[in-house]
Image (spheres, rainbow, N blue to C red):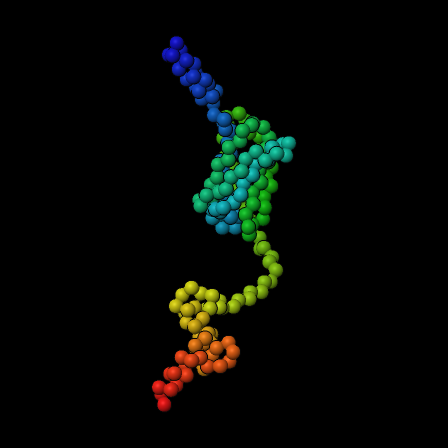
Length: 173
């Protein structure tokens, strides 16, 4: 009985493998610069179905190549975009069941207009720095200890000198 259960489980697991991959269709391609023919990395590739739904996304590698798996066969449109290049909307292509379509794309360089920017910088306040420089900057701003600072030993709350203080003065005389 146990052997029969194991065989039934294996049969259920092998059914998807026997029917083919979930991503049987694919688009493989290479993206190049239109002027120089150099491969373009980091180009975003998107495949959109005839109903307007994005069905696959890919990004080109350093050598300009990409591979996008498509779940359903049919008519698809390929879009490619990268900063500094003109976006490309390719013609509709038909991808058949278990078919791998090879495509080479060429993107034309396009200047990207940017607004002017203003950079404003200031040095960080060393008093807020948790380093030796910050410690010395904080220490330099502390008021000095001396005659301008009142201490509890020098005067009582009534303004008269304490008895201990007068005894010290008497010894000095």
